[in-house]
Length: 342
Image (cartoon, rainbow, N blue to C red; front, side, top):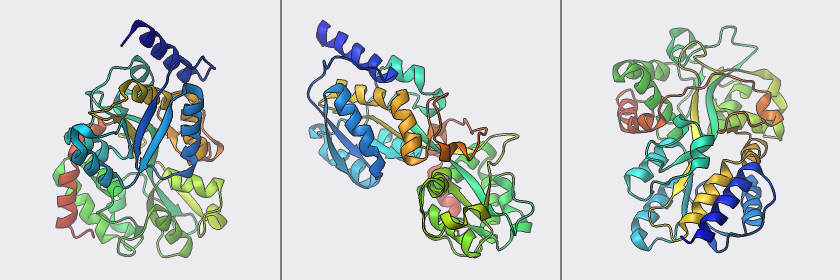
């Protein structure tokens, strides 16, 4: 890279992080492969284009399909960035060899170590706490830990997602990391015995189960509930006051966190633009929009929360190494199969 280009890149990166206006030095394109399916992300892309002068070309789809596509494209892949949800998918992309290590003082300074890959191949940019919700009228003593969800007193009360769902796989993988496989299997078997119904639907459906009376306790990511606070979500928002919530394990490991993150593609044709985009996602401006636009928790400490997220309150997050958690996913799936968690 020329001296002028290096200076330009540094200038843009600094401006993106502070949100300041700056001269347009960059040019060219950025090819973004994204499995984030939120309309609110449009603002992230348009603001980056306006501030950087870089044009974003998007390919959107299912995370597994995008990873497979990048593998098939190989060295000829036009992808510059893979943006997706959940650590297990980011780690899968790394293991497939479709991401590359990068050096960025901006990302190192702003993204906490436990929210980034040890080889700097992926970084987390927003978080969702996976917590417990309950019917305030029917549950006097809600479970205060993930472990307690398997207690006999909650028999026939629990709604939760299928074992094939990545969120279910990741929470069990985290329990494996903290407690070991034997304890994790006992936990999964206990939760399965407490099902109010067979696992089904998405996180919003678990919340609807509380409102309908089909279940008394549910597990969901926080941003689904935050969305029901901020907007009108059928079957949830009109009865929002009926639902209470618990951030589990506040006296020990903390609440489990799911990530949305991204990395630079192994064969990125526009590598420097890709790094600039990741640095933009770590800026105060973008971090605030993750919270305001999609009810997520920012990855960067100290960034203001949107009212819907702030209403959920502050809590202790689990700062376990998420790369280690991702490596436990195969064991988690085996345990699910053994305890007949559908």
